[in-house]
Length: 83
Length: 213
Image (cartoon, rainbow over all chains, first blue to last red; front, side):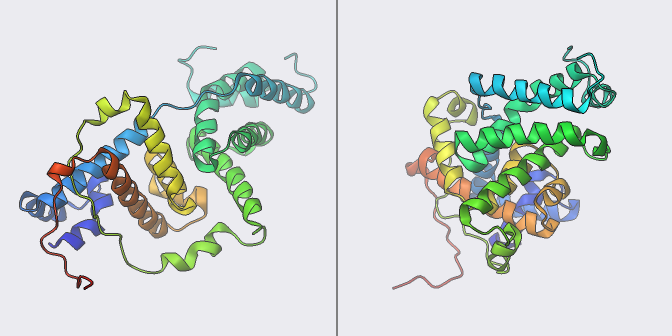
């Protein structure tokens, strides 16, 4: 397996969906190729950082306005509901 | 409403006319939807529009939610479509889908080669504790093409499967995979420029292409 082949399979490897036979070849390549090892490692770190990035807070005023709008629309849709 | 009640139960109650159940669902997902919209559009006003449209749309079409995807995935799909509409309007491409307008560029088989290869100076855990990191993440994401950014956000940040991402964006799964690979490699490149340790930078020994003179 060459570096280019590895790059093409990077998604599957990082997501753990690569075929086991190919996975073995992949890991053999990694064992002897520091640049590929670092690329895989830093791709994983990149995904981790984004995945763990905190969500934004809704602006308070917007949130109140949206909930009010939703309640009004709900009443139009469910005119008989007590809510 | 208790946080223990699962989405399916809340959807069921909301369908039966229980407003409190619908509000519980809104409370549960509004930050994630708003955050997704902020990251796609980079603008608070548009993100607010998308968030409100998403929940209004969900309210109107709750009966159509079949439960073959999760409620979260269904919401992400609605939000993504609302965001795409804004993107198209911005571009003045109302009649051309994002898919059509970008399809040709996806045809080539080239994958960007990693250039800056170096271990990072700090672990993701340490980096996540620093305010500066968020700015770097936002900046790198904003520099991506929309088509790459959307796929990365849905798949890697929101955790949709390849198939769900493809459905949400109206793309083939093969197309999603190519875009995801490019997005991941481009973001890795940008983040490594900031977080990489220059003293541990590695140079690939076996490049196959000719170097320019």
